[in-house]
Length: 112
Length: 212
Image (tube, rainbow over all chains, first blue to last red; front, top):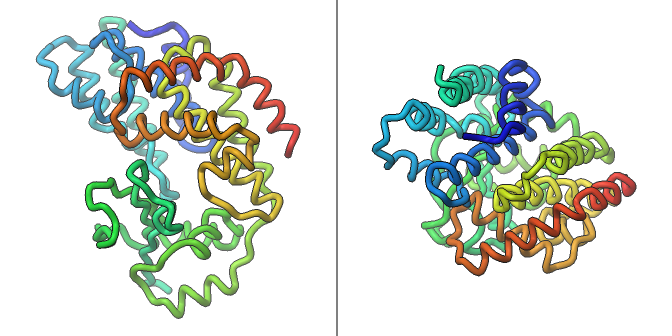
């Protein structure tokens, strides 16, 4: 459903969440996440993702009950945690996002 | 200082260059209460908050953060003790070493460049390149004691981009981050631009690294 590269980059972050909570690694994770949304948009809606919010609206209006769509809805609900523009410590929230929301979505691709 | 709270309008609307592609950027220090949009700005534009607790604020203050320089000298204080704020501004000394943040954004550009097929996701690809280059440009200019936070200036004067390239990156980011409507023609333009960037991003990174 998603490219091998995107999947392996996300799994690397999920397996080492502490490193991806700040600095260049966090920005890399944001870029990978954006790539993930585009790949999913092409797969699910046959069109590129031109905007995170619009993509979320499309997913939320989907009536599909497939595990991928259900877990995707959950993940998109919390995606703002990745993009907070402040200096408060969000490490705990980002770690939770990676190890719960994102990991569950990746699991759904494997049929977990 | 324990109960200190400030609210500032920052960014393009504080500079007077905001347009329909801009967010209304607010800096909240010591609080996270919601803020009214200034009456003279289009009320349909999105509010974007940057929040610092006092501890983070003073850490950045002591480090001479470029972002705080921008807040002090371009920002408009909307709420908070103005005498206290002015005193903080008078005593603020901006850092003159921006090698670390420039390297951080260069690292992200290298990551994007080494990501097979990222350019096929052309809107997020251009938007992510824009964010890195804009920040690198701002830091490069500040290294030359030129404190300019305007995205076009950062891309052109800070990174050496042509105005056409800078304009396309700004548009792609406005589409991706601010839901600006996108036409089929613009989509085609982004696709073409993404392919061009894919060919030359490596050279751009090398040039920027050389400028440090």
